Figure 1 (cartoon, rainbow, N blue to C red):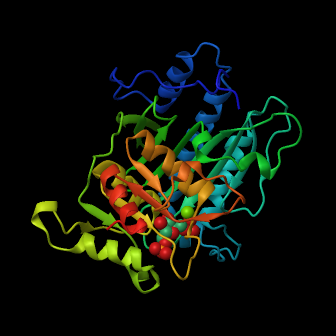
Figure 2 (tube, rainbow, N blue to C red):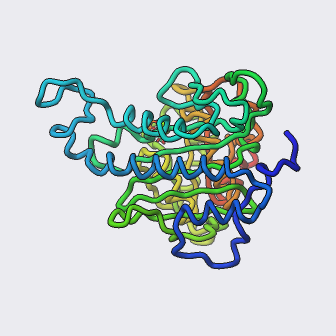
Amino acid sequence: MSNDSPVLSWKSPAPTDSRAGITLETYILEGMMGFPAASGAFTSLLNQIGLAAKLITSKVRRAGLANILGYTGETNVQGEQVQKLDEVANETLIASLGRRRHCAAIASEEMEEIKILSTDPRAKYVVVFDPLDGSSNIDVNISIGTIFGVLRRPDTGGIVTEADFLTPGKDLLAAGYVLYGSSTMLVISTGVEGGVHGFTYDPTVGEFFLSHENIRIPERGKTYSINEGNTAAWTDEVKRWNAWIKEEDKETDRPYGCRYVGTLVADAHRTLLKGGIFAYPADKKARGGKLRLLYEANPFAFIFEAAGGKASTGRERILDIVPEALHQRVPLVLGSPHDVDVFEQFMRGDR
Ligand code: AHM
Ligand code: MG
């Protein structure tokens, strides 16, 4: 991949000029205007993701009416088979990205294989996504999310194949997530230079407005986030780290508090804003970890690093991993630099 490509150099204006209150579309457009040679394809693709986020949020917000409106995977009052919300989200993203010719193909958590969306040779991008993360939380009205990453095809000639997606996360052009929480937020980054920015959705206007400009993760936090129910399956290193973080020690400000939603988007978002650590390590049940490299770990690793944080397997940097398969799993540790460093020290046996 060449570094002097106009599209690869796409970035938002310097995060020092305050742009609080601008819409997501303006942010995306200004990013393109900061680079006159840009073709508009990347801008258009990001806008289509923003559109999908609006459409999915409107469906998520009506999910509590599932028995009346559908989205349960069962039959509705008319006796018709209704779609599950994660399938609806998946199809919404595919339809939005397929409407313009710039996205060559997508890979989704919901689909075994990649899906080709455009055979136009000018289609330079592929998109990875988890359309509805935290799906076990839908039924209980707890935050869920969407995760996405945009990659440039290594070679735009020929038909897209799975190999076009098997690129390390450090090559992502953009990554983001949408959190359907007490409000809907879209957080996006085009990398370290462009920074990480959060947009809050105003449903009365139908727009995302810049509300969290240039997010920086604190150097250290006070919260850890892990599924503690897996303790029996953890390795000794993880058990030792977990015991340490819960120990009382005034000097090092321990114990940390524990928060765990069970939706990666929600747990990672809180960790990004408040600092601390999120971990889903490998254990005896999930030896390669549980979360997926391409569309869960990589987008978050990209965002955390751009916000000054760290993302690791516990032993190596997530963004350096060369993927071998579309749905590959990986141990994932995200957080404040200090907190991830400490976790890695435990994994190495240095503590
Ligand atoms: P999903 O994409 O099928 O919803 O699964 C991924 C979710 C993550 O959001 C979350 O971090 C994790 O699985 C929770 O797993 P567990 O229930 O084992 O704690
Ligand atoms: Mg998921």
